[in-house]
Amino acid sequence: MIRDETLCSFSDWVRPTSEEVVEAMDELNYTLQEWADLIGVKLATISRWRTGKVKIPYAEWATICYLTGLGDIWEREDSIKKIQNKATKAKKYFISYSQKMKKREEDIFSDGFV
Image 1 (cartoon, one colour):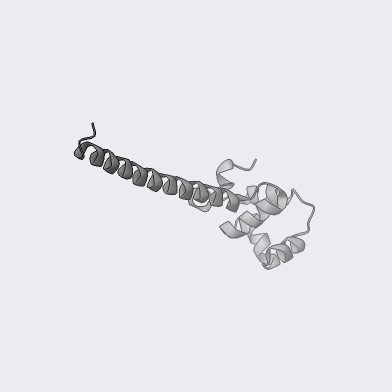
Image 2 (spheres, rainbow, N blue to C red):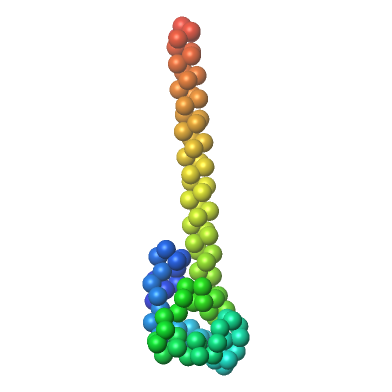
C-alpha cells in the first residue's frame, strides 16, 4: 500500500520505498523500457529504483504518480502556494483598510464632529 506521505508536495514528501515504486509502476501494464522512455531515464535506473539500490528522486516519482493516476502531487504544492499568496494579499489589504479606517476615525474625532 502506497503511503499518503509519499503523495504530497516536496516540502512534506517522504520518499517511497522500492515496494511502493513497484506498486505504483505496476498500476499500468508498461514494460520497464516503456517506463524508462516515458520518464526519460535509462532502463537500469528504473531497475535500481524498483530494487531499492537507488532512491527515486521527487520529480520522477511525481511523474509516475501523475501517469498512474495516483495524483498530481506538484499541483498540491501549487494549490497551497496559491492559497498562501491569497491569504497574504488579503491580510495586507485588511491591514491597509484598518489603518485607513483608524486614520479616518482619528480625523473625525480631531475635527470635533462627535
